[in-house]
Image 1 (spheres, rainbow, N blue to C red):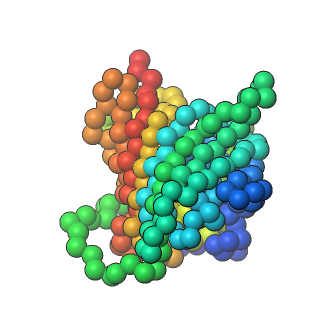
Image 2 (image 1 turned 45 degrees about the horizontal axis):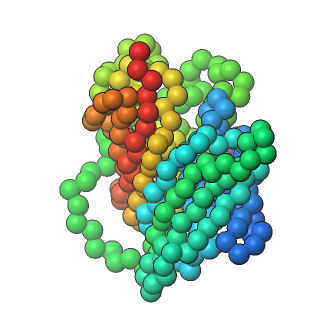
Image 3 (image 1 turned 135 degrees about the vertical axis):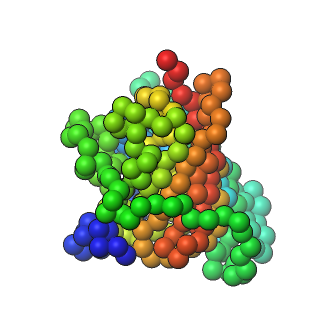
Length: 287
């Protein structure tokens, strides 16, 4: 791990014993039904991060299905989630020898006490450790400057309390060439690249990859747009169990039309393997 990364934490957290694990933990209430407390620590302004929510649902399905690892998971974000109690209801759709498929919904109660569905997902699970090693690809890792030449939230102005709690839980170092928006000079290219990890030093696993694909600033910022960019739908593919060390995340947008844009994400590990991919459709507020 680069020196800048190792300096982030004095004592490294481990997979299964970190803030991320505690905050995504689900408790079985009844067959297929799980209780969870959505942590305020993974919010931006008052919005719970979509990648964190995907990891919560991913954990519930991993418990409900006979296979341990998400291979593909597609989520439709129906209403805005709030920090606090929630329920995840899962259903097994099909089980096979190498893949099992299930669906899950995350629900909360509104101010009138009515149950509201926040997210619905459909996912297929398998065992990443059983996959063959054969790789044939034209994909290449993103070209990022060394971590010490990149910039994190700590290098910018002091944020308003509670406005970006999630950044305190991430090791995020952004490529300077994708930071024009922070200086009032967006590039117009719709690109975002960064070194990525958890602030407590916990290594990545398949569930934190679900967080990684939706944790960088929106590419809309580099298109000259500001404000919340809510996800409508997100599909993530986990391709391999990541090697220890920091991840590199690259996100691009090629088309903004009708107030919607797509974001294509790639996540690369320290062994130069493409370990996760995603595409999402998001809304933007046009001037």
